[in-house]
Image (cartoon, rainbow over all chains, first blue to last red; front, side, top):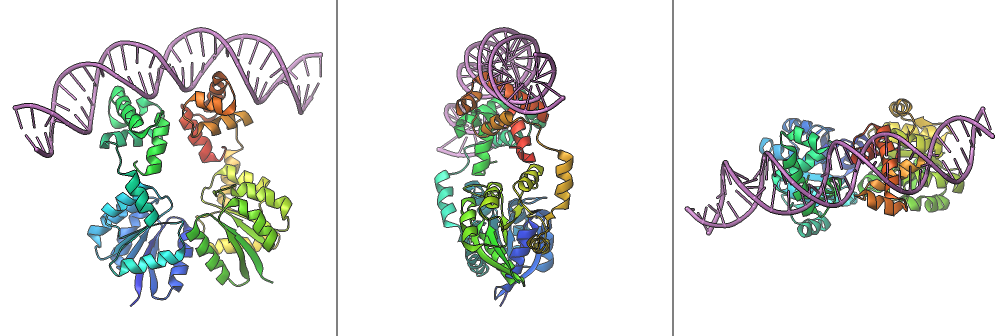
Length: 202
Length: 202
DNA sequence: CGGCACCCATGACGATCGTCATGGGTGAAG
DNA sequence: CTTCACCCATGACGATCGTCATGGGTGCCG
């Protein structure tokens, strides 16, 4: 019985290479491949794959959001997240989105094949190194609002801009930022954004 | 006559997939693959490939620096840069580093194969969309020192830190940053760093 | 009900930042 | 030699930022 796979990945070259390679693997069949997150649900509804390989960084909606929607729309399709960045927050988000597998792209293809088989059989496949990292890092210390402010701070320059973007007073924004800066051990708004982004707390 | 290829790419999964796929292509032979920029020259000296496929973002030294060193160390090996980010500055840097080809990873594999063949025969293969972008963007407006200061600003938080890292007075750093901010049309040091990074002027 | 955490806001303080004017030193181009 | 661009530095100014104290509002939980 062959395992039917859907591929979601925005880099055309990588997507093509993976599709070709997985098709060669005995017992695998790549039934579709998409380049955008917002095409995942539609493709899965059409092809009914056993496993969906989702990148996180994609145009449209990201892989995590796609996984969330897939869980209710096509629950029989198991999700494996394959991402470039081993951010601990990503693993948390992926698991709570119902993903059964989580690998970073810096792992050999043999492990990817093994993970696909394991997940197709109803098991799980989590990158062990990332699991310990996620445990040691812990969850985000930021309150939801602090997260919002920090996320808006990435891109817009001045505090006034952020305040305008969130319909808040400038003082409130400064307070949230100050709290975030302290919690993250940063000394600048920019540093705080950098840290939160690296840990996947954005 | 087969084309001998060396692969330099830090993402294991991508590297493995490309190696497998290119090996299947008739007339191609992947003679080696490395994961770090500082292993490129050594591997090329050992294997003498016709074409070296270099990623830019790599640990050790980046693909551009590797291309520069390769030109004097193993001049018979032609360089093709394959990178994730289509930053105009990258194309400039790659060409002046002696690269014969330049593609972004968001292009089909068939075009990669075609580019490899063209370069192996002594021709060139430049992504046309990027070429026009590089021409319209133009070269970096930053002076060398402004570039240094901006590069140091990415990471270190306060001006005092940057000044310490470059053995400068805080005032001088502020002046260079002010000039860079104006030239880039930014309103914040962080914004200026962001813009310069996106255009490949870091 | 009484904590408790989070949200929003205000005001004030010192530190830092971005801008400008100014000046001296170097090296390449005319 | 003059001009020009770049480098480094200093000082001063106003704007912004990060911190703190304080207060009122909400909703959850023991």
